[in-house]
Length: 309
Image (cartoon, rainbow, N blue to C red; front, top):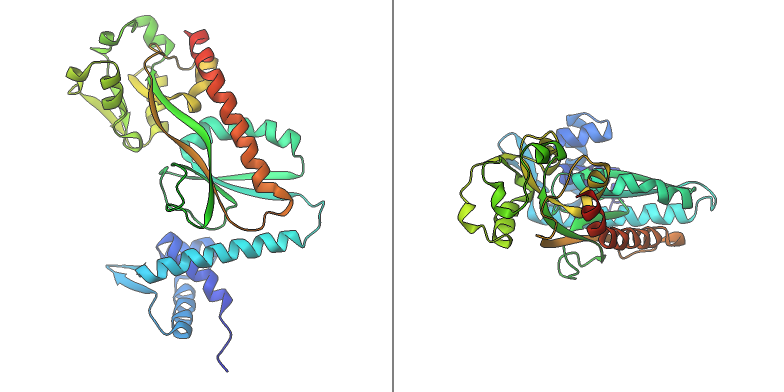
């Protein structure tokens, strides 16, 4: 009789494939590099094929192993859901949500208080990813990503649109008082701030403002939008920012939109969650709440911007 599938090794394999590193997997699981290596070797022996190949000093999952790891991740998620369904019905539930860093910081987390007030038995745990199009990871109930509703992108998941995204010009009120921007041409002489995670924002805004001849203006580029946003708030330049994320900053007076009528629509955000059992409709209810918050944000955004200006 064949030996039973080594479930512990399977879990370690999923983490190693997801993190792309035996060392990082060991750190996450509290194991040594050697222990991770031995468990991976045991699983390879059971499967009869290699799961990782050496690339310099790193062990990288093979293409087949990456597909296998995605299936393993979904299976563990299903086990977790089943276990929770068999648990105490009145116990506090944990809802794990993965979201892009800027969206989590500027839009999702500030709104969670209203969700928790109506769902006292649910604790929302938010983890962040640096790239809005990063692959889905195991260990979460719901992921928020930039995207559209297409079954071929995430075939094993439900995909639901939750938030629109519109770009416009942003600057600090102090900088506006010193050097106001009352029409598009007034941006000349200002320092343009951009980010690698939102590449192309300036090009599209300049086109919408009929300022294509200014595309060659020098810019200061930072690795992430939340850094660029802080630079703009500090009055060190002007930037392009998304209104759904920045409406709180605009309403509080930390930022302003000097030309709010010049807007560039972008691909919005979707909620992505597995096609599996959802005890008590916990995930679906949270998605419905996200949709309501997104609709409220879209409706109020223009009013907030006009009031702030």
